[in-house]
Amino acid sequence: MNILSPFPLRIFTPVKDSIDSTLQTVESVLASRLSVPYTYIIYNDFSTAENTARLKQEAARRDFQLVNLSDLTDHPSPNYLMVLQRERRMCLQQGAAMLIVESDVTVQPHTLQGLMQMALERPEAGIVASATVDESGCLNYPYQFLRGQENQVIDSRKHCSFCCSLLTPELLRRVDFDQLDATKNWFDVTISHRSLEEGLHNYVLTSLPVLHRPHSSRPWKQLKYRNPLKYYWLKLTKGFDKI
Image (tube, rainbow, N blue to C red):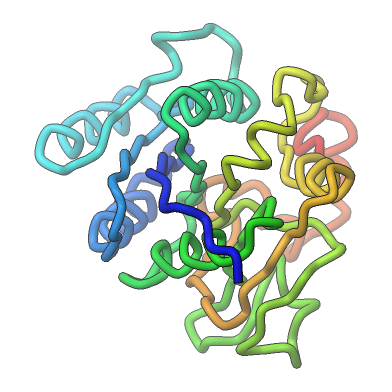
């Protein structure tokens, strides 16, 4: 098996309020057992002044960098595209992989090392993603369609969610994020498809799941389950959640 040389990681978490769940994410990431150098960045996407102050306090005493997007742009949240573009440039400069851990996810100490190891062992990989589970260990949104395929490595033709996903240096070289559609809010579907178009493989690891509390960072999206008619009305009339 052709195994790549290890590469550094740039790990980031986009944040808008929901600071309690975010800090659980931070604590779990910082407890990771990683064998390579890494940088961990929190991108604060126009949280309230109170929550921004909390993040500043935590950054002063924990080992992560805080980037307040209000210092870089006046574009309203979400600014996911800007973060992806900025991180891709940094990864290319440093020869690093991009590892996204969203603010409603909790990883295990071995999770991030496991994702990196899979990427190293499979040079054809574009994305390596952890499947997501609820508190009972059952596969949940957005990977509930994989129930019955637990404890596997799945070469997926469907898109990978960016809940907890590693984007390899090869994908970052081949896919130019500056060409992504700026009218959209989220880009996991587009980038997953571009990865496949480039001849790369996207792997979902149900053998390496992470705890996911869906949409805790954007509570309005809970309407998708409680009141789907209202959810889709807001999505249509307000232009929210463009994928």
